[in-house]
Amino acid sequence: MNPMRIQHNPLFSASLPLTVFLIVLVISLAGRMFPLGVASGQERPFRIVAFNVENLAAPRSRASKLQRYRWDMARLAHAERIATLIETLSPDLVNLEEVTSREALDLLVSILEEKGLNYHGYHVESADTYTGFDIAVLSRIPLDKVSGEEIHLLTSSDPQDSSWKESYVLNGEVKTTGISRNALYYLTVNNQKIGFLGLHLIANPDNHRSNMKRSAQAKIVARAVRDKIVAKGYHPIVLGDFNDYDPAVEDANSDQVTKTDVLATIKNYDQTTPEDELINVAQKIKRLKDRYTSHWDRNENGHADSEDLFTMIDHILIPKEWEARIDRAFICHTLDLTTSDHFPVVVDLLLK
Image 1 (cartoon, helix red, strand yellow):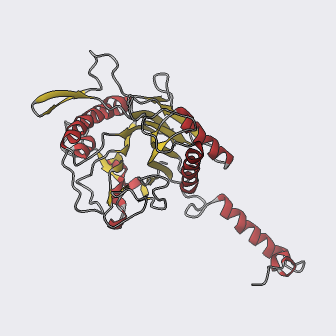
Image 2 (image 1 turned 180 degrees about the horizontal axis):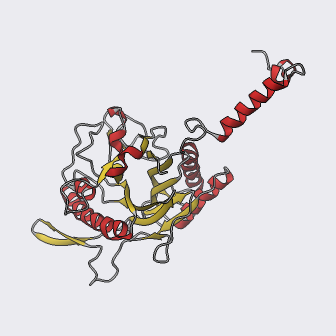
Image 3 (image 1 turned 135 degrees about the vertical axis):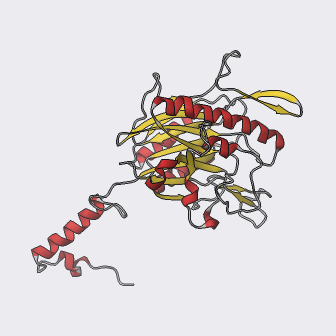
């Protein structure tokens, strides 16, 4: 292939008419001002991402008892891969599950800043003392400060306070649970007040004990949406790793069906009405084969094999009346197990 010779390029020719040159210049500038899919005068969608980053840890951190990487070099490489994915998706807000510390989030923010991407980082320490997994948020727009804080953990430290606890019966015994991993935060976009509840519910949708506990957690979520979001005049969005399937939205893996009412309970958070108040953005993903958000590497060989399990357990739920505001919804499958065993759920909303 011959190298390009600048002196023969007509854009640099002295004989090029000035008017043609100006037209080319205007088209070039327009492409920079209005990215693909966002023409002049059109509303730019607000992109929301929910992503389980699978144990994002800072170097020299011992915040979690579950160490994915022992060496700092590997932890830094993991953060780099997460940052590259965020750079590619270019979200306005990201709900991140399995961030193990404030230091891990700060590392991610610093890498993004080096790339020229400015995000506000918010982190709340979870009540999960074993895994140490927390929920963190990256947002281009500063979060609203409500009750003196930008981000809140729904928890009850007082044994007498049952606000964020729920009882359930397991094998004839009454037990109590809370949601140890959550984050409540608020944002105002184009005069639209949105209350987000980021979740990471208890795992294993095939385990009876876990399912009973998760069902109780769902009741707490519904209560939080009513009392902490809707009652404050905000529109609710619930997102994250639910560790359960939505019976109303067909999954790419038809063999996996929910054994609980977790999604149904959260979507119909107002018990005075028979209809759901929230919808799953995944219903707007047209191609059924694309509806999976997690990869269970059964033989732990680090590769996708025929016996591996791909299911949709991560979700973004938005107000039902906002269905027409969905510009696009998809699940990003451009990563592999070296980055995470989950895939980001993405929705573009028209919030003008």
